[in-house]
Length: 221
Image 1 (cartoon, rainbow, N blue to C red):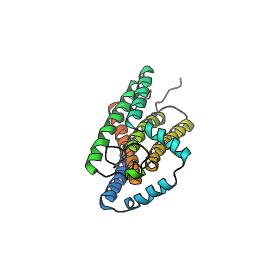
Image 2: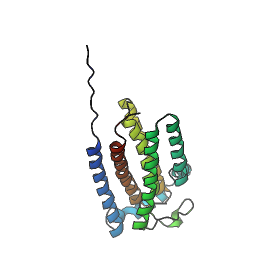
Image 3: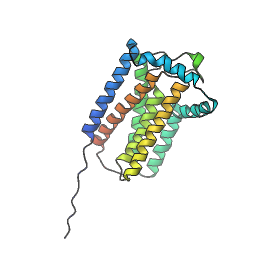
Image 4: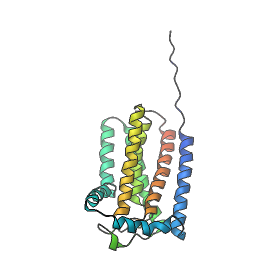
């Protein structure tokens, strides 16, 4: 009689902890650079000036809706739609993880902006309505990174083929990059705000991953 041997899943928590530590170090470096005027923050005005000079009607027409998708309203609607879809498919664990990740990132965004209180680029350069919140870190970059990162994470821990997992990761990176770069292009944020948003998004994704694996277990749906 042939015996089936269960192959234990690799514990990803040590790797996630290492990634979170590295990303937190990058975020801290960016935060110090903005507070003290060190590199790379010293190059922020030049990058913004270049983005303004490089503006083109077609790019602007794309950047505006892209940046809206990464805003509070856009991500709230997307999160609600995806959670509803997951619940209808019986994936309540995934819906819980996504909702919890997005609520946490939203609260963390507000907290960090109040802590650093960095001014945004001049409204004279802005393409759009002025924002009322502080600049560092970019909430659009942070929250979009968390949203697409969680979805990519679902694919990475699933039984999907390696090609589909790679495609999910690439799509998540491209979506996060598009929203973040649109913030610089439209002059809502400095480049270091966006880089910090991506860095803290990776930290938060790793924390969510560790908590999910610890509390909910590695079960795949």
